[in-house]
Length: 386
Image 1 (cartoon, rainbow, N blue to C red):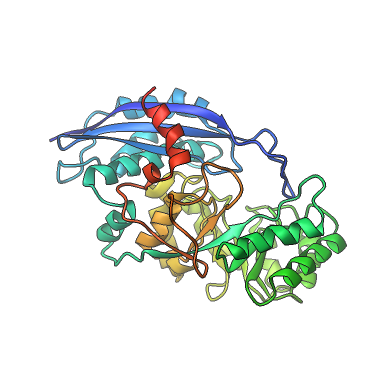
Image 2 (image 1 turned 90 degrees about the vertical axis):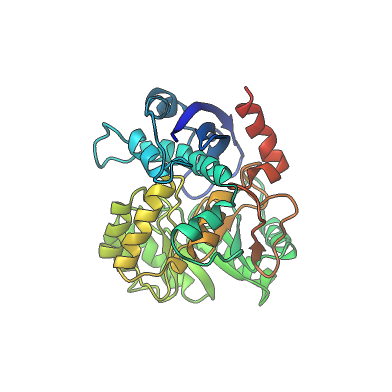
């Protein structure tokens, strides 16, 4: 039998908000929503995908380069002939693309890759996490750690409002919360951190995220301040490609650090591990498959981690989406980011899934499980039926 991609659709949607981190505001942020239909093994399925927040919609690249290649690719059947091979689809998208210079290209491919894997798992009539576990000879772990990302700068947001936000996350069952730093002075950020720590007490841990804002001098100054607090991690202090800065920071910050969400290939990940001074016993890697060419490439990234002596359990991806939840459950990652109040309807979990003691339990839903997140699926279904 053959397997083909018969339809690809994209729409660019606003996810605008007045929030900001240390580097950007989200007042004009967009995201691409895609629907990819495949026919394989006598079955037909439509899979859905979208790009993670922080990178804009990729409609131009998708429509002009990558969707046409998928539609022109012909037979993409796997070895069984009963399903589509995502790696063949990935190769078709990357045909005639030069290496390096990943840029926004990696986001466009990753968005389509999400939809392809969703459709493939639906053809197999399995949750994606179970399909991945089977392919890698692993046991799936339905219980996945999640943390609440928030603490953004917002007009008029004072310390009381910041504390109340973090308390809401604890009330929902989270045991780790995250806030932004670097968008104000060091002294003011110290006050914000102390306010949150006084609010959460021993009920949770706090992670802080500078979104790549600092030069080395500032990153070290913050490290000297932050090391006095019991933090879960100190995230992305400097430019994501400044491996020397990241390596130098380890000399001043003995606690856990995290980075990787803005590295978009397995080669970038390998360079981080070679030159970034990351410590496999305490640090965290945040590669986001949707921003970095998709799950096909993410599996190559995990192989690079294994070669370097890192466990996949040290990966907690950026993005807060159900795709990474499935990868975490299927491939043994350490957990996933989550946005309880932001970037809706794209963030969060299927309806009825609740956080308990900092974890969620993956439901047994075919594909990625979008159909059981009613607010998101309403938009997806409209695109798929357009």
